[in-house]
Length: 193
Image (cartoon, rainbow, N blue to C red; front, side, top):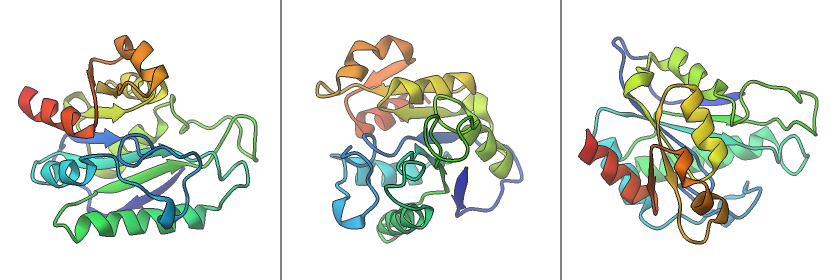
């Protein structure tokens, strides 16, 4: 697993919101690794800025099997994430950390990792790195594998289930809640708080 941590470790445990990347923050295009191909999901920027005003740590966790498949490199992902982080920062928002799994079960050297969602390895690594209270934390994602990773780590989960996402719309019962996009998911969390 690879990580980019932008915030110091908490002295006391704090809650976090774990966010999937592709299909949750940016539009899903398949193997995104170039800045020029990035397209924000509707309302994602404003939602991240709103979330930045809370005490939740904001942590991105994303599977990036394109690395294991040889489509792009770790460097390409680091570059994209650095750009993404700065796009939020210049708008007075924050991202506390980004974790990504470069593995795949059928490609590359490591085929049985503990970080590829639906496994919860990235969540547990962030808990250790940042002193997080997982019982007060959430995961928002657009795939059942996102929800499963969150559940395995004891998080409350929200599945983004827009009509265009067949898998999500047929499997929303896996998550604690469902939402049509990141904005509605974050609004729900802040209301339930």
